[in-house]
Image (cartoon, rainbow, N blue to C red; front, side, top):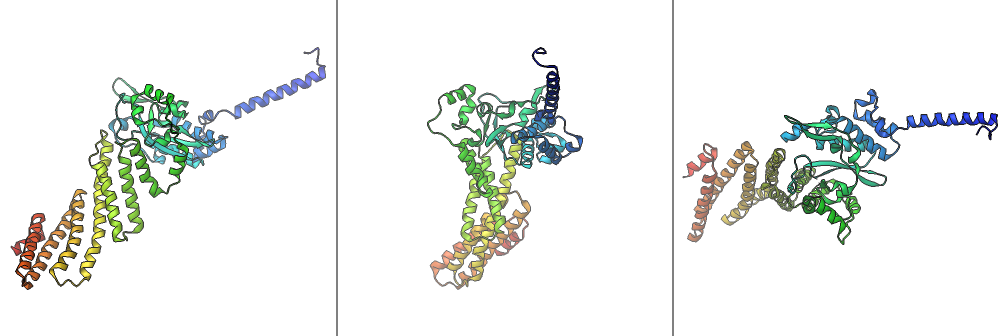
Length: 452
């Protein structure tokens, strides 16, 4: 080459070559991967979520990089809470707690992932579902979600991320199981067809597949899943349209809709719908401040009853889930009691504002009120609020005694023997019910004794 290029030109070429080499070296040093950048977070940024977010913004060149950076931070820093997982006890779940303590199970990890992504301006959702993870036995069924991961939007589409599984795995030690950190890229932007081999979302749209795999096929194993993809169904499922529809719903509608979609995918998974109905009803009652038309109470009480029916025979092998179910049922009965109590005001006011001058009119108005009050007492008993139950039961008992007294007056005024027998029969029925529900030592028990 020296023979073909004049000396001055050769000198210039060497200078240019060295400059390019230097620039290339500098560029490669400054433009390292986002994974490398996340291993070098300055101490000034590392102490808070917002600090890490600012660092990511300064170092990520795309939305994909941002999503990957959050994944890296979690898989490098957050440890899986094996102790709480094995004891089926709640671990840290709030993003701030998970960030500070760096210890959580999948719920807390997926919550933190979403929190950080949203702060970076990314659309991100939590996906609850069924997994064939630690302890799973092939062919075993699923009655409720046992794992959580995320979907995040970048490059115009949704991508699946599981920072829990990406951080490492549970390994059996000599005396106990322990978490072994082993950060892996395998669970970032994982192919939907690979994901469904080990994890199935509660609602089919988050499979991100145009031909979703049924729960039955998912439980049957890899071979059946592979056969499913070789012989796709004739109907194409638009998961994109379903996701857009779902995310576009108002929050009060979205919650029970999620439950319905979950129940459609797994008929044994009734928990999301039941709790969705409870939450929707509670929020509606709070918004209305208890001021509803009488007819609205019937639809509300029917919804709560349906939710109670979904849960009352539900049993979970996981103690934490069973505790949530039991607590949910108690709260639901308390809610139902409140609905009936509010409804009872309407017949009570009618009874108070009406000039009741006959046995028939008293029977008509009192029956409506006492029916509502009886439902209030029954639901309060189920809610296990013993103090409230005792008070309401005594009120109901005294109401029956008061009706006995009122019927007695009409009995004395009545001259028709047939009507007298009818009223006397009703009087005896009121006192009999009061005697049956009266608690020992209560004021109502004393009133009954006085009338015998």
